[in-house]
Image 1: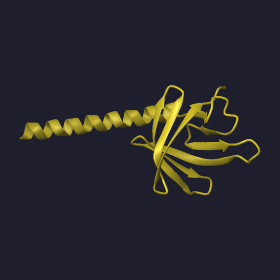
Image 2 (image 1 turned 180 degrees about the horizontal axis):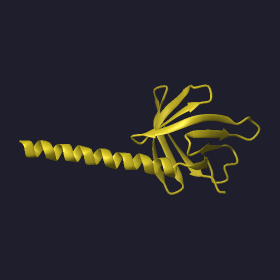
Image 3 (image 1 turned 120 degrees about the vertical axis):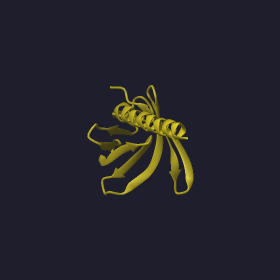
Image 4 (image 1 turned 45 degrees about the vertical axis):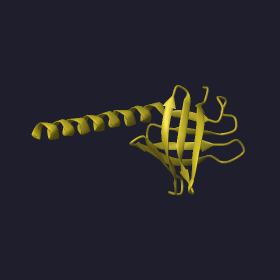
Length: 116
């Protein structure tokens, strides 16, 4: 009985460590600019290491905000402090996939890392 409890605790602790490493990796991988296409000519969102972001769209003023990642979920707050719907994120190469729910409707959006 005690061996089982210890094994379960060890498994839970290792899962939590793996999750933390995943969040740390995502926090590093998300840094930089992302858009709907590699040129990012229509719009882009730039994630900075200090937890800030800037949304840029030609012909419009830049919008700022903050971001964080916890348990694989990206949370964003706009410049007024209003939260944007959370999204589960997956980064594979130069693709950032966001999945979540906005006003009761599921969404999925794939962004591409902007070329320098």
